[in-house]
Length: 285
Image 1 (tube, rainbow, N blue to C red):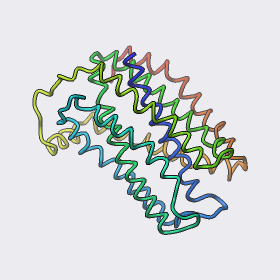
Image 2: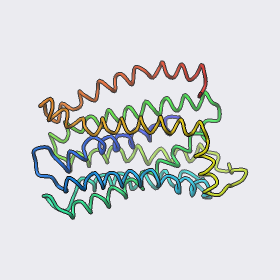
Image 3: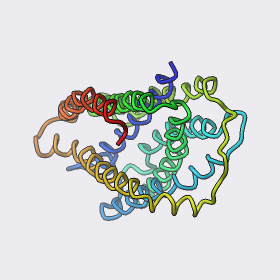
Image 4: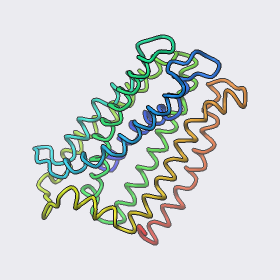
């Protein structure tokens, strides 16, 4: 059951991230409605928050590598960050002013950057747990496949945001999402505590800048990062504009957004057995 405890964490975190990607801009800049923040500055806030998300992972990973505790190197961050992420998620949808206001913009910038930092505190050490849970290549591929499946499941959950928002509004819907996601992100960490070898220690440490230089000059890493970055940009863009396509282009209701998400999800789900078989046969490369 170790693989299940590890991978189900992705279900909760990806659901929250999917809702933010798809509906945050729709909430703060509703089409045909009263915007809550100045349009021109919203993109600036999003750009800065994404930069914080990327850069925060570097020092967090470095600190995690050097952490010594009764819970090991990773779990204090995985569990600790998971307590803050759902709370900050709920706060994102509760701006101080009902109409357009610079205070809403400041509030959004502060909460969104805090959310991104908490998410990286949780996510970066979480990703680093996989080599400690699965030593063999095939075992890692199997767990990674299940992790991708739960990532897809999180996107499915995020797809229900439209019907929920239309029925209950943003505040109540986001509280429900956080309530469902929090146990998935927090509780498995306590189970993994009993499954990890907490005595594992690196043979030696290298400095932060040396490790950064070594990583960035690694050719396979450069290729992987470029492809992963393009995939992340494309998927984020699709998630962000989907509610607008549904309501403004197709002239449908928010509740119909889930049908647009499902077509992509079905295609992704159908590819899993094929990709997993290729990975098992030809290896990670």
